[in-house]
Image (tube, rainbow, N blue to C red; front, side, top):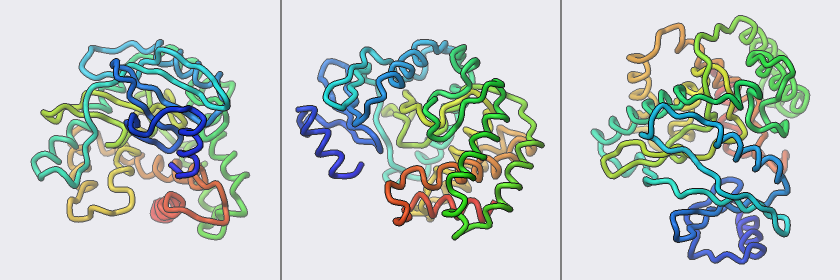
Length: 303
């Protein structure tokens, strides 16, 4: 999170930094000391966070092995949204702090978490298809058709960023190719999609078992399970900071044991699609291209 935004939230909320448990791209998380946490957002989108609460309340789990967020209360005060949740069990891990055997266990657990997500029932998203209905990335369509959602979201990103992205990619050619890919897309399994599933959004026990999955949001949807598989692969070592660990190569070997070639063949499309619609998402100033932007451009050019 930007330092000025962090300080602004601290100043307005009156909460103390010593109680800060974690910070994300859009929120600060404070430990309340009573098995609950409070997430504070600089936002006026009270309706969205109540929608998020309804989404979590609607979920039906296959068992209690893995926990998801449970919102207790949502309130708005002085331009901030305060979301109180049950504190999830587990701790965050970093690959560079694990040995080879532990890395293999964690990669397998990441896939187990994806499988668990695909088994969760959600009538809420079966009807709505997307969680974040603020037209930020994925777009809601009246047809209740996941492929139509992909097409509309792609078209919006194309129109918004056509002149800008054209500096780094042949945007018309890329747009036509991705549109064609959507038309020929075969979806064999529809389920809950997290959309931002990577090691910082999951918690583990001391035995390296995945205990909790966090931070559903802008890319959460009901659609092709392989989209989550593809993005979980893409988000491994995004900026190639840990090349010696060969995380993607090792994860791909695990995926090959669990998915067919036809299923895995869709991964490049979903990575390119995500990169196309999100390239400028985190940029406050489009004159300053950030690391996420260049990561997206590289994905698109190598698709």
